[in-house]
Amino acid sequence: MILHEFIDYSTLKMIWWLLLGVLLIGFAVTDGFDMGVGTLLPFIAGTDIERRVVINTIGATWEGNQVWFILGGGAIFAAWPPLYAISFSGFYLAMFIVLAAMILRPVAFKYRSKRPDPAWRNAWDWALFTGSFVPALVFGVAVGNVLLGVPFRLDPDLRMTYEGSFFDLFSPFPLLCGLLSVTMLVMHGAVWLVMRTTGEIAVRARRTGTLAALLGILLFGAGGYLVATGFVEGFRITSDVDPNMQANPLAKQAVIEGGAWLRNYAAHPVLWLAPVFGFVGMAGTLILLQTRLEMPIFVFSKMAVFGNIATVGVSMFPFILPSSVQPDASLTIWDASSTHRTLFNMLVAVIIFLPMILLYTAWVYKVLWGKVDEETIERDNHTAY
Image (cartoon, rainbow, N blue to C red):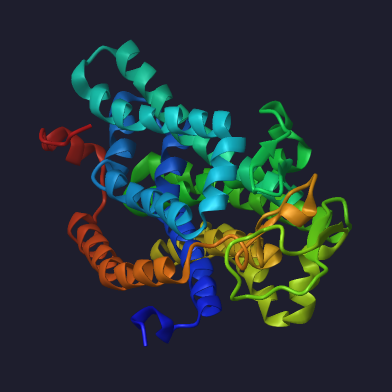
């Protein structure tokens, strides 16, 4: 028997759906607090020394956190080529804006300290804000559009035609999702600053994190209400689907239906744990920010990130990119994946390298852990930022 046939094709598809979720959550949990800190920078730190304190809490680790973003993009490209092709084509301008903004981040980190001029440093601080705020917003907007359905068609030869425009992406529900994304990451970044700073910066971070957690609960609840009441319609497969089929999105029938995004919860009540984690994580963060505890707050903050992202995944399953204009062309994990052998070979690579990445990341954070304050910045001239 060929080695890759030891694992059923449909099982591999499920494994890769779960792994993509792990990679996306890993990106949001790690690079998410970087983006939250960058978004807060111009507002939570007034003086140059305070801004240097804030920047140095993430300066040593932000590059490593980008690994999750690269892994997520690579996983989409290799595991679901149609998803990569259609999403990157249809969202081309939005993706370009995100990448341009993210390019500002390393430039801002490296160039800010090159000159002592206040105007120079202030300009790079706002560049760091832009490079953090814009991706957080656009990623959330993209998720909102995926929940609504993306306006693309497939012809019988599976050639894609995208019928939307850039400004169509920013309709009310996607904007709500974008604001939730920003709010969630600002909360996460504020919790990080509570753990890593002292004095007035930590006090301001607690206040900001409290406000962000409260707003996050309201936005998450509003999004759930819109889905539950049918304002945001979902998608449902109406034909038989072979989980072991080769990639062919047109081999099924699907419809747009109010309440369809809640069907998985009715069929499997245990899935309600996903939105519960989202609410409990934000509520726990809100409450614990009023105490002197630090590490438990970060646990609840990460729980909120996990719950928010997992809620989207389990609501949409098995859809990964529904089409609002041709529901039958919607992409699912069953009909848009790579070959059996490709998924198996990728899984072997993940089994080998993902534990190494996790262990190295844990070691780096352990070595670099500790409070950053103004005294540290003034005493250690080797601080990079």
